[in-house]
Every structure is written in structure tokens, then in C-alpha cells.
Amino acid sequence: MREAGMAEYELSDESKMDLVVRVGEVFSPAAPINRRDLFAGRLQQLTKVIDVTNTRGQHAVIFGERGVGKTSLANIVGDVLASRPRKHIVVVKINCSSDDSFATLWKKALRQIVVDEDSGRATVAFRATAVSDRKPASELLPAEPSPNDVRGILESLGESVLIFDEFDRLTQGKPTALFADAIKELSDGSVPATIIIVGVANSIDGLIKEHRSIERALCQVLMPRMTNDELKEIVQKALGQLEMTMEAEAEDLIVLLSQGLPHYTHLLGKAACRAALRGSRRHVSAHDVKSGIGTSLEDTQQSVQNAYQEATVSPRKDTLFKEVLLACALAPVDDLGYFASADVREPLSLIMGKRYDIPGFSQHLDKFSSEVRGNVLEKAGTQRRFRFRFRNPLLQPYVVMRGLADGMLTGDGLALLKKKFLGGRTRPRTRHG
Image (cartoon, rainbow, N blue to C red; front, side, top):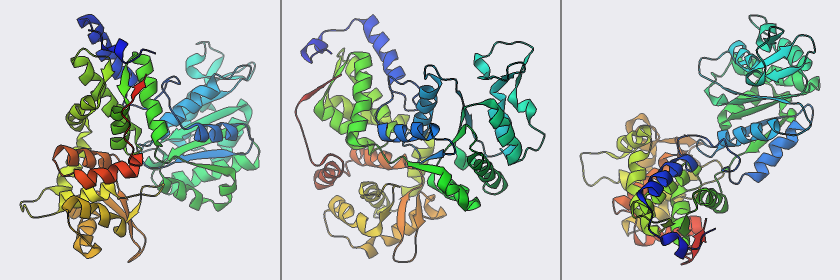
């Protein structure tokens, strides 16, 4: 890779334009990663899922907060399995929708598989030659298939992996119950098919509740927020593709603001690299990251911006809605993103420059958890033991960036954020792509 000094030479307009376009290709905040050369981290979770596909009768559920990269992992799992040498395996991926039934889900899945009527060999539809003796496996399904019908077809297809993404979009009830029955049928019959379900924790709980006996057949793979090293790997892989470099301080700032969510690593990385390119530089500085915060705020999903406005807007200037929401965004969380009221006390006190106890902001937490303030927080637990988390995790880093942009997050509050995510480290070194 280039040393920092080598990256400082003047870029031609043509080279600059080419890099500007390529930056948008390697940093992709709006779409899941589907290229192995850009996929970063998650080795433990990837290994678990691949191991499940090698164990007959086992199936997997990938769950975690929204925005932690579950779909990207599912894409890479499918890519890894489909490219295994000397092993015929059919891999299909299905996106669930709110109007899906058990029948439509399986028709979607089996429509992607074609069967050679002479050999019985199954192939992914887009890889198959369009000849008359091949037909979609979905044609073997009756109009209203049962779990046993699904089992019979999958049993005849040979080894297959079916990935059902956005499972939480299914309406709880009959589709979920039938799906649980299908998993039990496949597991009990040791059918050479693996089901991989991708969703949030609540959808997984609902699935298991429908059929407690399937719990032993499900490997539950939690996708926590990404570690600092995993987020840095995203940045470094992208820089390697672009032949650009970045200061360690700039990289740390991107990690700091991402708060474990790869979406913001991509968003900030893209904005920072383009800021450097505007100055005809291949070397990204901390100043480039800071100047990219405004662009990143503008490029954040409109639904996130609207949620922030609904939660914090007030005709009165003496309200603390912005400050308390920022304190919530700085509070330490568990693996599923939950924090307690007590966790808000220290960050709010640092933001305000004076001591705040729970009664001073508990009503704000209640309002954030109600329609009054747009339900931006969801509340779980019982009285005096309530825990909260951002209903949309993507709102949390946005709140922090707004705090920086609006001058609310300075001094001790900023130091707390650094301590929480970086251990208070600052390192004036250069990271090489």
C-alpha cells in the first residue's frame, strides 16, 4: 500500500472523478454487502452458520438489532456455500414481506429452484439452461401446502440451503406457526435441507413460542454491534480498494461515531474520502471526517431525521428533550441495545455540567417511549426495572452526530463517548489502506 507521503500528490480531474465514483462503490451505507472482498469481521458468526449447514437436522437463526449487518452476513453465507468446490448444493435467498403467507413464502423459495425431470437434479433457476425438461420446484407444491408437503419436496431435491431474510416482517400467527412446524418436520426427518432465518430478536422468540420443541434444532446466532476492530476492517478494506490512506485519528473518529453500526461506518467513510478528494488528496484526515459529518447528517434516511425532529421539537427553549435523547445515545447498552434509567444519569450530567438524578429526566424517557414523542424508544421490563433502547438503532449515532454539529457534545461529554467506544485512546499515527 502507499505510504502517506506518496498519497499526497496532485490528482488529475479524471483520476479524481474515477475515485469519487469508486468511493460510492466500496462504501455502501444504503445496501447490504454482497462481495466477499468488502465483507469485514463477523468470522465467529459466519463460522457458526456454515457449521450448521454441515450438520443434518440443524437450522440457524441470525438475529440482532436492525442495522448491525445481518443481511450482509446472510449474503456472504450464501456466496460462500454456493462457491464450494466439488459439492453440489442449492442456495436460495428469500425476502419476506408483511403480506406473505406460508404458501407464498415457499412458492417464492421453490420458484428459484428448477428440477431436471430426467435426472431429478435441482439447480438454482438463474443458473439453469432454459430447456423443456426443467421446471420450477414450486410447481410441485399444492395450492395450500402443508409443512409435510414442503418436507417432501426438499427431501427430493438433495442438499439445499434456504435463507429467509426479514423474517420479522411476517405477521405473527399462522405463517409463523406453520413455519415452525416445517422446521420440526425437516429436523425430525433429517432432511438434507438447512433453513436460515434472519430477523430481530422478537421474531425469533415468536417462532420458538409456536413450537418449543424446535429450539433444540435451532442454532441461535446473535449479531451484536460490531467491535471497533471489525469497523476498522471495513474502513481498511475500502481504503485498500481505493489505494487511499487515513490518519489513525480519522479512523478512530469514524469508529467512535458509528457506535457499532456498520451503516454509519460506510456513510462517514464515504463522506470523509470524498472530502479528501475535493482537496485532490488520497490521504484522509480527521478534518475530512469532521467536515463529512454535515454531509452524513443530510444523507441519513429521512425517516431517521423525522424521528429526531418529532422526539425533540418543542416551542419552549428550556426543555431538555435534545439533551436527554443525546444522553440516551451515550448510555452504555447490552448486546441487544438496552440501557437502564440509571445509565442516562452520568452522560446527562456531563452534557449539562451539573448533577442530574433519575427523577429529573424519567418523564422524558416515558415520553420518548410513547406516541407523544414518536415512540423513538421502546420500553421493556417491569416498574422500577424498565430498560430502554432506540426503536430504530440508526437514530442513535444520528443523535450523537447532531450533538456534535449543534455544539451540545463537547468537553467531558465527548470524553465519555471516547471512553465508551475507544477507551479514551488517541493515537497520532497514520493508518494505511
